[in-house]
Image (cartoon, rainbow, N blue to C red; front, side, top):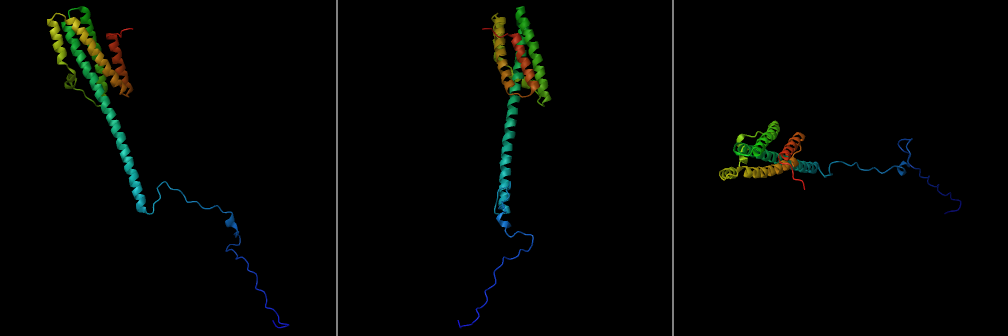
Length: 216
């Protein structure tokens, strides 16, 4: 540098750029919360096609579950109807056997038992048949005849010829009543209808009047 030479002027200071909006705080970014991505009920996919695939898969699962539920309900309904049909067919057989006893028994006590059984079971059967018909289930005489046992007829015929009809009849009637009670209990356990349960409970109570349970 030559003597008496004037040094060059210093560069001006660098000022921060003015914000476009004078009211905007240039340091506001220090206080802003990071933006979070909104969640969606649909699975995230890279394309609309993937989202459609997810939705279709969910629909298939829902349809499968619905089919299982409907199948279960339908099976339960069929099982309940089948159990009720067993009850009414056993009732028909009890009525048939009781009428044979009423016609062929010699002892008046046995005859009275046969008549009372026939009337009692007929009343219970009428109640159940009415409930079944109300539910759209018609029981034909042919259906009721399915419970008829030719072996029982043969047994009673042989007993009449052997002159011990009353004894054999009472014993056979007790056996049929026992099987009838079991069918009532099975139908009761598989039934949800309040009226049907009440009818089955009444039918069971009638059997206890005819043959009271033995006390221990």
